[in-house]
Length: 176
Image (cartoon, rainbow, N blue to C red; front, side):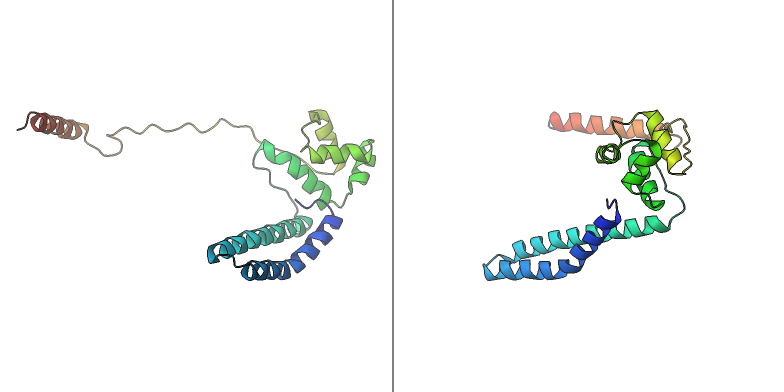
């Protein structure tokens, strides 16, 4: 995840040079007599890395334009806090000043996905970012048990078929 404008600039520079890098890597493999399968595999890997980088850049740029950050579960909260900081244009240093800690503390929180931050600190950070946080706790959906009859299967017919198969097997075992 890109976490600041400096990283964005570096990512864009890397992306712009990636095509040339891929070409050079493929030429080197071909020059060294690599098998076609190896070349294809390397090409696919490099293209996947390029696409991942492109998506990270897109995510960062989209984030700066968005009004809300979707949190699907509690494990999304750490990234959402970082996204909220970025969206609101705060550097780690500016956020640290707002909550009266040193910048390194914000860096640690973000590097560790806020695992070491207590709930009170997380709430303080969310408030400092001028964000509103809401989540709904609800019971997990229970698996629905479907009976054979409910599914439209005649259980008496199934039992008849089962018994016929058992009888046929026993006849086969006896040689008849």
